[in-house]
Image 1 (cartoon, rainbow, N blue to C red):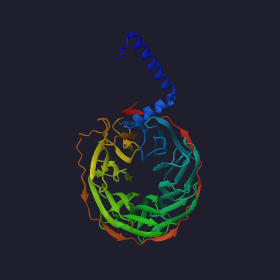
Image 2 (cartoon, rainbow, N blue to C red; image 1 turned 90 degrees about the horizontal axis):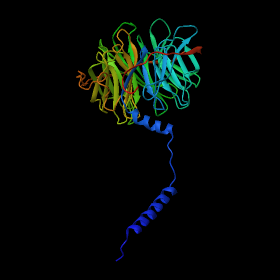
Image 3 (spheres, rainbow, N blue to C red; image 1 turned 135 degrees about the vertical axis):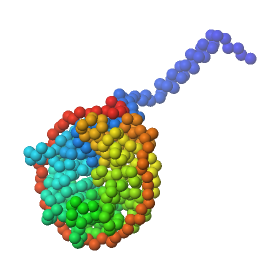
Image 4 (cartoon, helix red, strand yellow; image 1 turned 120 degrees about the vertical axis):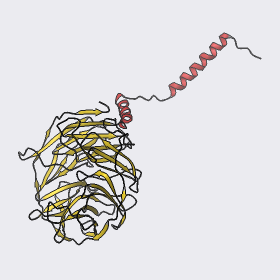
Length: 436
């Protein structure tokens, strides 16, 4: 037996320490920069909830951008936010000495990192900082939505007024600079049509949604209209959905879904939100009303990562409703004390971003309003109180399918350069909750 004395123990520990230090010395050093540390911290904070208003106006469209931030538009303003709701830039757009353009109703990021927006007669392309790249005015046209297509061009959807006040449904394929590649108008006998939403589909064609109504612009009758088009805008199928009596329905948003077919968001003419699930041929799979949830403005249906849906609307305040793949309510949240939620989509962290209008946080004013919700629709209690009971329900309905009989013609809208100018603005930002 060998006994190790105190001196030998010290020597052994010294040798072990040298070996251990040598092992560490042979390992590569990993240095974390200040920027990397901040980025990691921001990723952790990105899932946080917050609510902010950005001065007078409203939001019709909000989308997440590739950097994790957001782009939003309403009125003649476009705002770029970071992931925590801080303003990166905000611009106001005017043309030919006119104080402002008519309301932008859609905006999205383009493949070059810039943005494209549309509203009323105009389409506008900007760079990543909101500076105008090109702008076009489409006389007699009204562009409700515009989306970039894989070829770098755009698909525009709206209405076209040839004579008087009766519009025709109008779609156009634009090149990368807003010039018309082809355009089509669609009209029925003794009725007017408008398209509110469209999307290029996986087969290279297009799907559009809107409504048919009588020539009376103040009437409340009509049916939801959905059309499937080929790559050149020719009709593959067309159907009307709803009833033929007073108090019909309109379709405001359409999205192709991954399992095939389409989901359509609309409303009845009493204001109730309505969701319609179609198969690839336009047949009804199911449709549901959501009594208690009203559509204040033409809204959007957004798809979620689990095959469900998320909707926005109002019940006297802004409302966001999360649905499963069959239209069943998962949760519903009432937001703020007044206003409406116009646009919502799921974010990369599993939460949701909502844009709309609020008139409760700054009494006497209506403000641009953006809310970031968690995956369960949570925010601070002053904005989204989970204890508040909502009266929103789901009801199965019996929409009827009416074959459409629409004539197809070439429209003659000739776009002209609009000379739109971008002016930096500095509206006040108010934070209701979340990170400063």
